[in-house]
Image 1: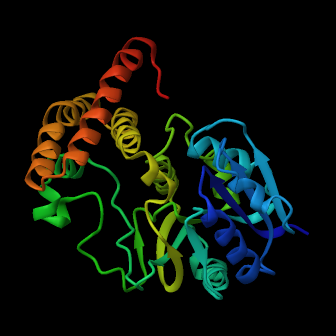
Image 2: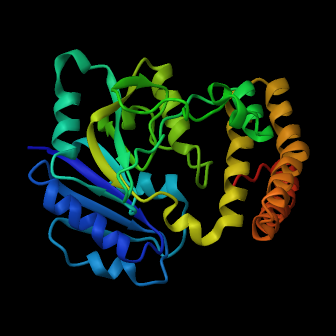
Image 3: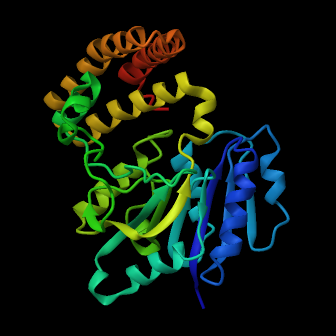
Length: 310
């Protein structure tokens, strides 16, 4: 008989968070979960060793950082389940997190819900504004120019909504990303073009094109610290985010719209980011911004002339 849920956790130097995450799955996910697959993306902090001998845990050492989407696909290839739960190592399950989510997905009236997210809270119990709209020329420009700070409804993230109610949304954050394995397989998993960032949103978009919906379930909660290991490499994190945005635009937009996103990202956004950093007197943020743009400008010729995406 197939396992109901396989949990896939991609680890990269998550420290104690990885063990806390896996412990929460083993404590609160059983018996729905009989398989926890940890894909270690070349960690150097020894965090993967803390879960290696735990029951029901399969550890896959890649030996290098393959990127988030590729590592998720590798983990999913080892899964034998009706559902896949992609869980960030800085997240933790509560006693009824998974049971409520699975119960919702198994109701007959929700047969066309392909993806489910839950309400994410931090140490202070604050609810994260974790859902997003599908990227468009309008909301990407609003985000790049900072207009979404003034008019949140024009932005990519649904920050104007309190996330207190269950509703269908374009996209739920990948920190807790429950998907039917049949849907994941139909979509051939995450697009590995994206090293990290927007691969989950791209998957949600492709699911929607095949008439599978995404639902944010406010009746179930999980813990999410936010930022996670990406806080260790802020400049590189910004570079990956900017690069993924450009790749997403040229994948899903027409050439004219994608070109506008490219110009705004390259020429306008560094100015607005720099001005914001100077206004806050955050010289660290200013350095990180220009370090990220240095990486982006070095990548551009390889992408334009050789098609390099990673």
